[in-house]
Length: 523
Image 1 (cartoon, rainbow, N blue to C red):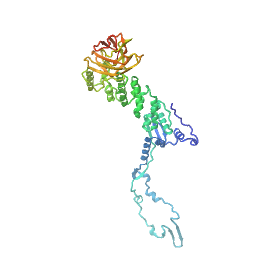
Image 2: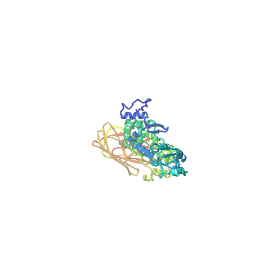
Image 3: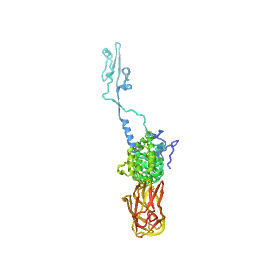
Image 4: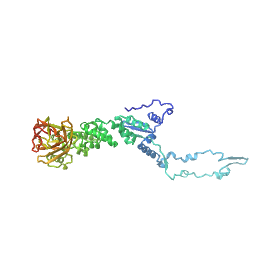
């Protein structure tokens, strides 16, 4: 845990004597000795002082700031002479003021006689007869304009300015002290919260050494509880590795992540990056609700009234990350359609797409559900412990659904032996058109009976249409598990799924049993 060092109440006498350079600098900071720059930090404008030379030597931002300030202070200011009243000397003062002359400048010579008195004043190597009355004739008084000449150039002065106080927003005094301490000592104690607070300062003032340490700390300590806040910092610091790790955690814990307080604080760029992901492990209903709540917070941050129009406006293009066509039909009609987030035209396009009369390219929204959406295995039969030899021919089964639902794939019974099996799966519509194909491999082991075959992209099944599944599963050993006790009707949430025999089945699969023991579905 990071600790804050206390200021000494009484500075040591000769404190410099036994300290290293680092220790001396830290001592001067803690005791505010010889500081020449002052900061007001945070909302409370709490003040702390520091030393320009240290800050400028550690941060190019501080260097540029102080250099510009110095240049501004040294810039001469033109002061009009009419404002220089204190510098004007009156003529009266000039005439009344007599400077004593030195011996080298004047000498007085007196010659006393019975007839006259004469005084000679030495001036410039000549002598003046004091008895010469012409020397004492009244002379015209000089004008001030004759004695004081206006300067040819404007008078220039450097005016001493009051010490500036720099305001540091978007942080608190404790964090800023930790930041200054690193600049003075190259030392910092980090935990997640400390690193999260210091990283923005490291970016702002371009202190790369501190930035690297904070990113490493965040990378090591990011988890499901703080992934959203770490993602914001990764975005700010452009840390690709941290962003990738955060994204992995968020997509896999999406249900919790998108409803967290940290998600509601994210910037629009981060929210867009998260919600556009196809791997987001949450239903479209949950993503929709989370984004609407985020939009409410964004309205408050922008001092806008919270209403449906403003929420959509502040969301901008983020709104199109909601996959309305992939929503559960009942939820969409109940929670989305009555509201005005969608325009009338958008609602009409979605309705036409759901009815099959509009292609997906006509929609401004993506139509496929997220790949990582949790699906459910809806079982129709149970395992038969007896093995059956596979003929290599296809197994087939027909079914229909009573409500819209997404088909992600099927479950299959595996081989008894450890081996690699080749899988070919087709999904056909009521007109026997192939609407999806999967080709791949399944590695089976003796103790596992059931395996999932997941389609490359899920299929939106429409109610009251019959679909056909054709499965070909072959391997070196032909002994496979199979099912018995099949049902022709099963329920999943609020819908019903009916199964039928298929004429394409050539390997024993039927309503009663065989292959394809489950459908992988999500709403």
